[in-house]
Image 1 (cartoon, rainbow, N blue to C red):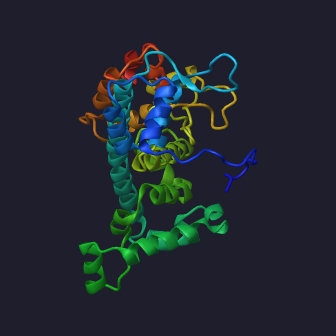
Image 2 (image 1 turned 180 degrees about the vertical axis):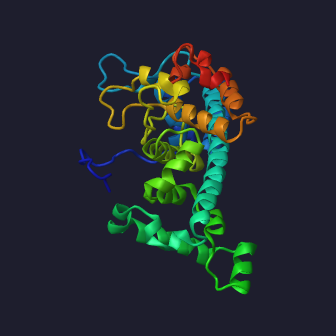
Image 3 (image 1 turned 90 degrees about the vertical axis):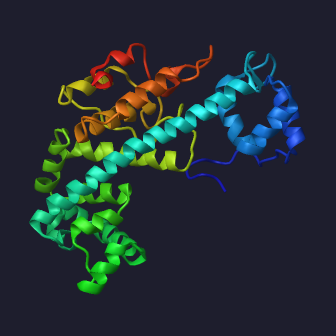
Length: 323
């Protein structure tokens, strides 16, 4: 089955390989290692397909061959395994930052809407008419209701036993994931959405909406153990305009890769946004220091550096990373 929008070129004809054959194949392509046992252990732990994903930046084209099929000299198993471990650490740091943002967004949605009506989420007037007309509200509410019905949380049983079963908004938000929270925020009336954005130091709702979409996308990638360090963002966060967020003004000075469908931005852009929001949510948060420390300790190679993540020369001097 082909991915949508991608035409088939030729049938897949690559054979299944035993672990020994996989080791032979990697050796033939130039991977350097101390022992076959080390490679077999890595393949058993990580898998051939995933391991070769981390090797892609080191592929080189041999004279007379139509495509990159050889690893550059100095491409060692020891370094690749360090890179795999670094990527795991990056996913953990990203998820830690997302956790802080998600919990804070739950609080702000529950508190802001609860002041209007404890059951504001059941009232279509809470939402922008366009959100309602396009059935986005109905789909969102159906998903939220399904979460409610499937939940085994003690507080859900409490409400079911003591009241009629409906949850007030400040309880319901505890059952929603970041994607559902983002969709809910996206659909709010402007007079409800804008104060939430402003409270987080974001000048307008459209900017926060874009940031939440990008953060949710990178959260999903990290949660599903996708290779993250050199990933192009599928959804890139909008860059603030006209100095509206001064510590992020530098994002406009670093364009993404030309011709890339989503802008060609790397993890740096969403990391800077997470740093900004976590600092606003909790000035005592160590998230920015954790990310800075990770980048400083990223395993360097003559063919691979922190620019693979979008971190540019002098990034550490930007105010967002000194806060």
